[in-house]
Amino acid sequence: MVKRSCPSCGPEPGGEERKGRGNPISVQLFPPELVEHIISFLPVRDVVALGQTCHYFHEVCDAEGVWRRICRRLSPRLREQGSGVRPWKRAAILNYTKGLYFQAFGGRRRCLSKSVAPLLAHGYRRFLPTKDHVFILDYAGTLFFLKNALVSSTLGQIQWKRACRYVVLCRGAKDFASDPRCDTVYRKYLYVLATREQPGMVGTTGSRACDCVEVYLQSSGQRVFKMTFHHSMSFKQIVLVGQETQRALLLLTEEGKIYSLVVNETQLDQPRSYTIQLALRKVSRCLPHLRVACMASNQSSTLYITDQGGVYFEVHTPGVYRDLFGTLQAFDPLDQQMPLALSLPAKILFCALGYNHLGLVDEFGRIFMQGNNRYGQLGTGDKMDRGEPTQVHYLQRPIALWCGLNHSLVLSQSSDFSKELLGCGCGAGGRLPGWPKGSASFVKLHVKVPLCACSLCSTRECLYMLSSHDIEHHPTYRDLPASRVVGTPEPSLGPGASQDPGGTARACEEYLSQIHSCPTLQDRMEKMKEIVGWMPLMAAQKDFFWEALDMLQRAAAGVGPGPPNPES
Image 1 (cartoon, rainbow, N blue to C red):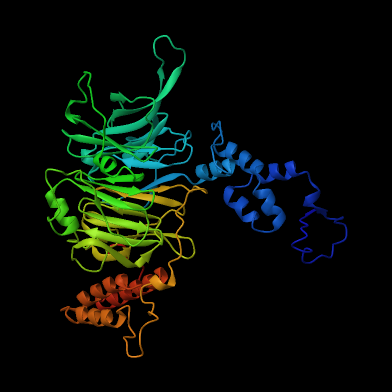
Image 2: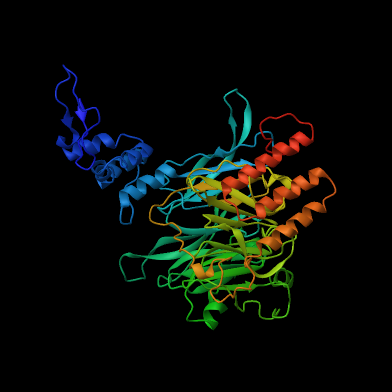
């Protein structure tokens, strides 16, 4: 009989020993190496739970020796523990939580499925679906090629399965990109930014590490093109912009400078040599003091976020410029690379860029949307375009944000640490599960979200979610000062000033007017569901009201009580 004896926890309840049992032995008398060895055989979830019982087990379960053994068990082929303050714990949790999940929009089965997990992968850092397959980059710089294939089911039937086989495409990869359009049909080539060893100059010994861009066919994984840069230039991100015949590659250096080069994709498969000029982008020439931290792009525009949280825009077509800013007053067709600064109230952490609308998340966790709102893809509760960043007040502190052709998705976390997926905009083709008619405000989608989901992507056929938890990299939001919270009374207001600074009463009157204008009871129920999504309620409260309205709607239609229909 072994007894856990921890000074901070006190004696064990029911301390009277039964006869014949012998004296209990404290677990603290065992050698620490033996205790760590025993604990390392537990599942990761149980190790974390055991570490929360008392101070002694917290120290034992948090030791790097335990996590080294767990990491070796989860990933036997992992040679090194990686980097960071807690390298073995970080590596173990990365490999325990890694997973790629997807849900097809069509077909009979509309449930979440998991792709094949490459044994060689050290966590999942990024993923990108293409026309036929999915590519995943891990934290060790290995790029994996997940293939769709015909497989035999348990019943002996041959069926087409998504992301069920994998091969290693290349190693030493830093980043990768493909056609920036939302439709994966256009993603024919995959551009990989990688580091390769190059032989030294004549008369010298050894080799040098040089960055290069390798181009692969997404259908077969065959390399068709390679360009190598000087060893003095080191890049960390690549994005694409423009048409196939004038494809611009934007490369971000470690120093925050942007370089660009232009290739013709229609000639990449021809066996010939090219001389391509690498030039400094105008945003780095005109604003040399700026240090760009990350980039985002689509077919006709590029967005830059600086290390200070500033946002600069390049728009290359007048139609997209009008959708984003509501005017063509400052658009210059002869100087399309001129960066435009967006006016924002706080530092921006990350963004999402769609075809003609965008989303921004600031350091306080606030979401700002801008651009075309024809289908309600901005989530503002209406279908009016926004020519400047507009805050979505009822959403805060998102984990991930994604903007597509005419809809938007937000991955958020509730108070009990469970994840949920919200969406707005066009619901055609099942792209907003549970809301086939779409919604002008962010509503909870009927999708089971993995516990450690960290990023998402939606195509015409499928919704993808990447699961991975990095203990050293997560968005840290600041608390908004009380003076800047919407609805907080200003100290200078007199006794006769309005007591509704947030406009809540006026908004409720407008909501009632909209409900009253609906001709039928079913239309009023649908309008009420949309209004619940607009209101700044907690996720549990919104779920309650939506479920109650569904019950009332079914009762009014003469349908008996039963489980909610996902397509209702």
